[in-house]
Length: 316
Image (cartoon, rainbow, N blue to C red):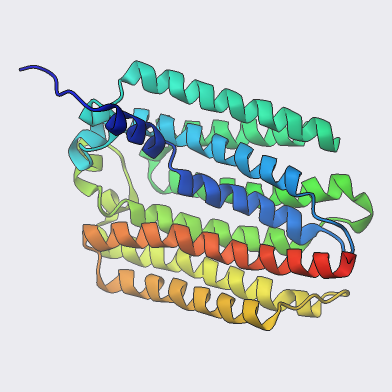
C-alpha cells in the first residue's frame, strides 16, 4: 500500500497547527500581564519590548508543543490520528528539526530583550527554565499524571514572576509588584484544573501508553471534581486583581467597563467549573479545555488594556 500523498497546503497547515499559537499567545500575555501591571504611574509603555516578550514566550511555548507532539505520537495514533505526526503529514525527523529551530529563535529573542533592557540574563534564564521544564514534562513528567499537571501550573506562575521582575529591574524604585504574582498563583491553579480535565478525552490512549493521568487513575467523576476545584483558582484570581488594588497604598481600581468584563469572565469560569461536574463526556471535556484557553486570554487582556489606558492618560 502506497503512503498517502498530501498537498502543500495540508503540510503548511500542519506546521502551523503544531505551534499551538493560541497557547503561545496566552503564555505571552501572561508575561506581559506581569510587566504592564507592575509599571508605575506616568511611565510610557514600551510596546516594542512587549511585542518581543510576547513573541519570545510564544516561541518557547510553541517549541514545547512540537516536542509534545513528538512525545505523544503513539497516544495520538489512538486518540488523534489526524494530527501531523500520526497522519504522516510531517515526519518525526522533520518535527525534531522544527522544534530545535523554534527553540533557537526563542533564545535569540530572549538575548535581544535582555541586551536592550539591561535585564542581566533574566529573559534567557526564564526561557531556558520555562522551555526546559515543559520539555521535561513532555517526555517524563506527563506520565506521572497530577505531578505533571502541577508542573504546568508552576510554569504559568513563573511567567507572572518574570513580568514583575522584568519591570523591577528596569524601574527598581517601585519595588516588586505583588498583585500580578498573586494573580499568577491563581492562574496557575486554573491551568492545573485545565490540565487535569484535558485527560478526560484521552483516557483510552493514555491507558494504553501507560500514562498515569488523574483520569486514568481515578476515573471521570473524580477527575471532574479535582479539575473543578482547581478551576476556582481562576475565579479567585479575577477577584484578587479586581478588588485588591482598591486597598493598596496607591489604589488603581478598574474602570467600570473592565469590572463588568471581569465579572462576565469569572461567571464563565464558574460555569465551566460547575458544568464539568455534570458532564465528563470526551467532547464536552475537550470543549471545556479549549474555552478555558480563551477565558485565560480574555482575563489577562482586560487588565492589560485597562492598565495601558491608565498609563496613557497619566503620561499625557
